[in-house]
Image (tube, rainbow, N blue to C red):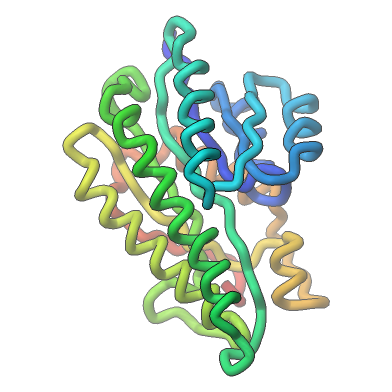
Length: 244
């Protein structure tokens, strides 16, 4: 029996938390959950009916990325366990009008939303290449982008830098499909619309929508684990509402 080992970044709250929970409980993955809020990650693992390993990390740190690789190797040492992929969910949003964004704002969002996922994927290229993945050689990378970064979509004030980084990570997911396709890696970006999360509240105070993080997390887990085989190198809008 194959047990797929997968990583979910930004798993301490919101969509990432529910994606990780669904992967473990519904789809049988051994999920490595990572983020900066250790207590919340531990609480998630303790309340999840499935295999979950807590691995706190700052993904902008090379040392932390290498430690995450070591933890994944350790998980894959169990018989029948194969590394399957990564849900790049961690993100940072600084909502400011364009003329108020400073270089530090741009740098912080670029590091978290683009550079961190890029370097984490680079760290795991050997494991992705060596792994049997789902038992048939298939592996999957999913970048969680935003409708704000989807070409031709409606744009919103105060989200210029955030939207630009989300466009970048979506493009990177397309490139990974080409760069890593020879070793069986599928790579796709999901451009999410409005979901009732803390991040939405920070960007649009007072806005309420009917799509909950539990629903979106389960949908992402299903796509990542089961429904990806006909998609590779795609940037897919997943939106029931504006804003994205």
